Length: 331
Picture 1: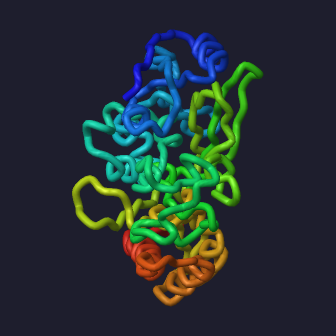
Picture 2: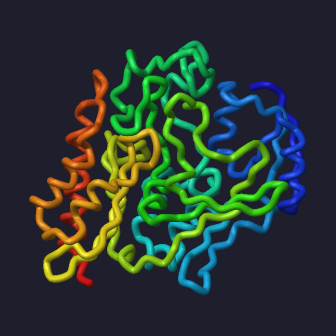
């Protein structure tokens, strides 16, 4: 790892000004991803600005019932927060399933949104990777791609998005709040994560020096009956092969409200809007759930080793919906 200088700041304005003024600088929060990136030379940072003293680590209920998660709130604190467990169980479960206890106690919510892909070719300096070095190609397309995406892919990148928490937050229509020298900004989380298209190196709309200050989760009564179902190769700490974040309300045997997002199968946390359209107003039955899953995966593009993910994603969706129905998602 190249030599890196270090400084610590205590207020948001100073942090933003310090990083924005130096294109080789970067924020340091929990460091669980940043240090990895420096070790494999995937990021050019030569100066780290420690922001752990900034006052943006709170979990607050807003007057309208929304819950505001500070950008520096630790994953474990959010996962175990009584208000999150009660109102958004899918988010609590996604956080608990997303990392080991040691990582959850260090990693910040803002950092989780910005973590880089786990594609082995991205982390191999000798491999072609358009995310790491635009124009060098995507080695995964003709390589070992069992864990790669089948939704939202492009000829330039098929890497899956790694975050579990982001999948739940996309289903919940969260907002990402960030700040820069021009002031405060907010963007819907589904717009925050970008498809690879022709620019896979650009994963979000933040520019250098922009700082995530909060994630706001709107009040959503249906989310009290929700879950995060994660399917992986082993029960211990592992990334998803397929996952589903689902909230469901059933009235008189009919789906009254549903929120659904997929993880592990797409290049970004995937809001399953086609499936939601099929489900709303339809009977809460396995037949309906299967039809919704088929609609959502209709445009999936498999590679040589990951075609199994299409069926796995469908079954994961159906199982999540059936589980919530059995729990009693009555309006």
